[in-house]
Length: 497
Image 1: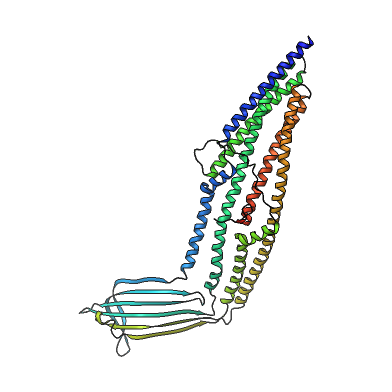
Image 2: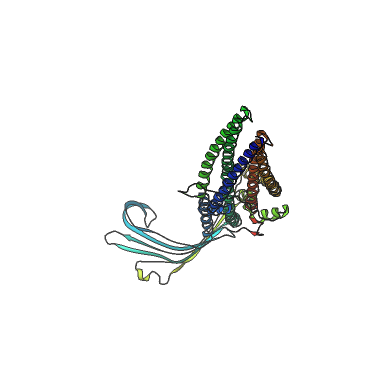
């Protein structure tokens, strides 16, 4: 009788092992087929760079900065303008100076028109403006007989030059190119930020999928173990509380599976929206096990961050803007003079064909000035305010520079630590899997109790989640390091748009 029971038990164990083996082969085959349709991290990042609404926003912001820079550049280029007055009619009674110098009100009826064509150029070095132009005017007098008079200035050159005044063009020439360069770097940083956010959403969905995979496996294992437990219970080999524990384990596994499926739906929606995909079903992700091999030195990263990023360039812009405020306050508080000089040719005649014959020269020179005598300390207060604001800007910039330096150093240290943690987590994941497989086999032959199997299962699931989390920490810090330095340490070159 004992031999028969032993024989039957061995047959059941062999049958059960065979079933588990078949299930494992089928699961492996399903995973192999499914692998062909999986997205890798780099594929997701590439799609995001091409289609993500975040990239559209980043490109639009840069386009706005580009056209702002073009407006600045156009101020230093020659401006060609055509202006004039269409014939206008005036019929009124106006005071007219008589030959003896007295004034008399006389009715007048006339029409005038004018045309002005000129090219102007701002002088960035001095803040002045020079203009070369030509003017033509006509007056029609409506009396008993209509008379026509023409006035022409065939060529006029004009200089308008502020003296001792604040020169905004000189400061713009320093600051605006730096702002545009900062905008170009910011665009690249925004691209890298898209990679960071894509990586974050990628691993959130990946972790949910791994939880679902673990939950599905736990449901299948719990169901199988429950069937075995029922058989053992019917044979009187286990107590009822053990059977109830197995039923509870199955219900918990089904609950975890439902929660994991809900997390997948949410994570899939967030990732597909960020990728700019529409009408896409459930994404399946591939675990990014291939880790790039390179070493990051703190000082090298700090040098690249200061030389390449918009952050360091913005520090310089803000310092210059502080100096600009002081210069403007000083320029507006001292002697303000303006030189206006004009030279050209002029002629007036009643015959249009004689208008440009033998013109006379025309000269105009005006020097105006404005000197504050008593302003009750207003000018001094403006200068002191500007200097105080500049000092405050310098303090803030210094603090932010120090914070930026510490941020880069900590980022490099975290990256190197995450690489080490990843190796540990990967090894722990392998050990936990083997431990669970061994515990499952020992449980099937009655060598360990159900509590040991439960602990092994929890350790396996926890080790798997920690491994995925370690991958997340590594890749997120990898892309953050790229963004903060605009340097590709893997390829050893600058990141260009």
